[in-house]
Image (tube, rainbow, N blue to C red; front, top):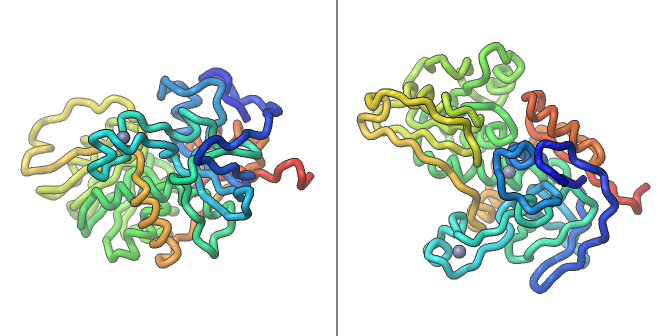
Length: 320
Ligand SMILES: [Zn+2]
Ligand SMILES: [Zn+2]
């Protein structure tokens, strides 16, 4: 399923099976998660994709040698820049991203730099594993950057929050969920996942929060979350794109409150999270679409209609 031009639907195309280059593995794709970032690429919010492009950076596939591997968003780094050499390869200035700079997993085959692939933990079926690779990974990094906050707010209850909630409960944190006003299904989902309170994102929780993670791409949530914070608390913005943040009184930031973003992932995040997920154990709730229905999956995600994570099932021609 190929993005030929931004703001146009993906097109079903027959592509040659890709040949792995130096250091790359070829994967027969089994499943690929659909991420909000894919929407930002398709919709033109992120404006420098390779075109034409195969989207998708939560790939579960089988390598030519039979190993089951996962391919995340971070597809390649130079290993030599000031960020790479200081353990911050997520900030590498030359980084290449899967399903953005290089073709991703909305396809029957993909190639990936082996050094950036992860073994998929045993016990996870292919479809359920896919959302771990970005929703889970970036969510985990966001949670880590929220520090040791005991009272944690999650703004936007999509794919990432539904995984982070499980990890955070496992760590003994108290959870407060924030959803779009009137979205009763999302509110119920937040409560099911262990939030002790869930309400509209412009509401104040019953207690102050030590940290909040903003998953929804809506800038007005930043001052809303700041308003809910205790002194010294942090707002962590987990998405790659957000609408403009409205101006707000300095008073909301005063008393050492902090606003920060989370960018990409390091391989260490991946190793830590994929080791932790089976221990929690994280169970992903998924809605499955056949590869050919990728446009429908994106549309439903855009409208906020997916419960948990959307995942494309890739059967491949040999199964037909
Ligand atoms: Zn670098
Ligand atoms: Zn993603």
